[in-house]
Amino acid sequence: MPRRLSDEDRELWSRVARTARRLHPEPQAAAPVLKPDPGAMPPPRPQAAPPLFPRSPDPNPVAPSPRIRLDLMPPLGERLAAEPLRMDPGLHRAMTRGKLDPDARIDLHGMTLAQAHSALTGFLLGAHARGNRLVLVITGKGRKADDHAAPLPARHGVLKHEVPGWLRSGVLAPLVLQVREAHRTQGGAGAYYVYLKKRRPSV
Image 1 (cartoon, rainbow, N blue to C red):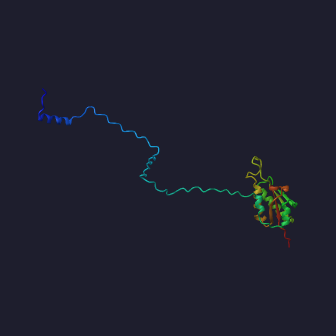
Image 2 (image 1 turned 90 degrees about the vertical axis):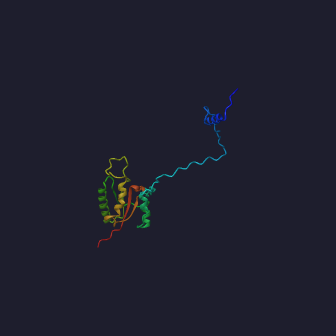
Image 3 (image 1 turned 180 degrees about the vertical axis):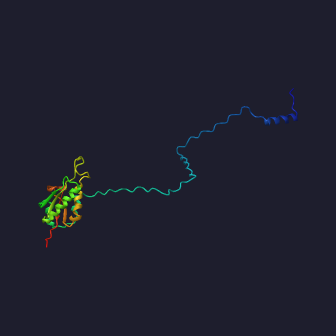
């Protein structure tokens, strides 16, 4: 016959049973995988945290470069044509149409700036003293870019651009009444009409 446990044995066994642990615990059920709902709103993106050390404003900020506007000057002939008319309108119309024959002419081709300035000054002083009114000054349109043998080591058309300034300065300014680009039959853009003031009779 099986032995019956006494009350003291049962109490001892219950204490031992409470401290016992399983050697092979039951596996836990895996958490269910949730499928995304296509109609649900996407979760908000996490915002970046502010920097711990915010940048101080630049004490010397660099301003953006201003836009450069290129204003092209009109051609020299147009600028001369826009100057106020100081001579007789009828003579001016005939002159610019190539209907007047110059009283004298000078060709500055092949001269340096110094040579051309000296020659032009002497020529106009003599023309004015002789009572000439319309003279033709030939400057040329300027040497070509591949013309390395030209005596003027300067920019294209240097005489063409310098002569109008010479006519308005120094001893020539009191003699000159009007300057216009020549008609194409008498040199065009490579020559100037110079209309001189009338010579005062000597007392």
